[in-house]
Amino acid sequence: FSMDVAIVDNAFKNGIDEYLKAEQIDLIVMGTSGEENATEAFTGNHTDQAIRVSTCPVLSVRDGFNIENMNRIVVGVSVITDNQLADALVPIRKLAECFQAEVHLVHIRDNASDSTLVLDEYFTKIAGIAGLKKYAVRVLQDADVADGLARYAHEIRAGLVAVIKNRREGIFRIFSNSLAEKIVREEGRPVVTVKL
Image (tube, rainbow, N blue to C red; front, side, top):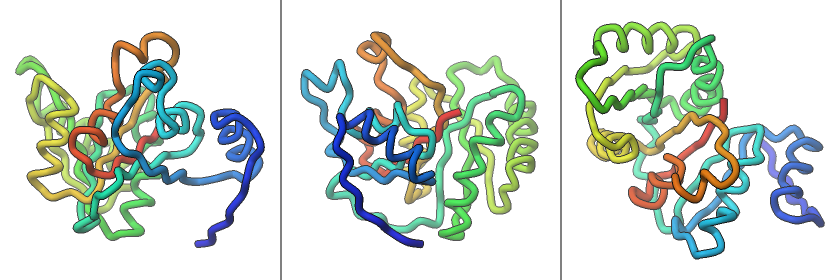
């Protein structure tokens, strides 16, 4: 583990993008207040901007949060084809190995029509492909994904929540805050965001 400090003379988003490409960074760690002013509702705060341009995972840590333990990591997962989910779980697996943490793959469904058994089998298969050693699969029902993940993370006293997300750009961001932003803002737990 080594740490270097660099000053990049560029606008934030362009500077992050430029630095990531030049230095082959594996993880970005950003502090955040979890609050958003009127301008940031349109442009996003620095953490949001880093998540949007980053090619590597971004760990958002809210100010004032003390990590009690890193024994458990909750990962919000969805059914995604072509092993994309397994690929996205690899950096989470590496992070879990650093802390000897158990990874809880949590799928939140909003209705009872999905088969829990089929979902359990699917996520267990994906965990094997991703090489997870210590893991649990949970399929829970909740009307709001962020609320369900935050509630489960609180129940098991998870040290970290991980979110795997697709790219969402443009005007749509104004109408729909990302799952990671909502969890950081409302729950205050550190969140690592991994893009597909």
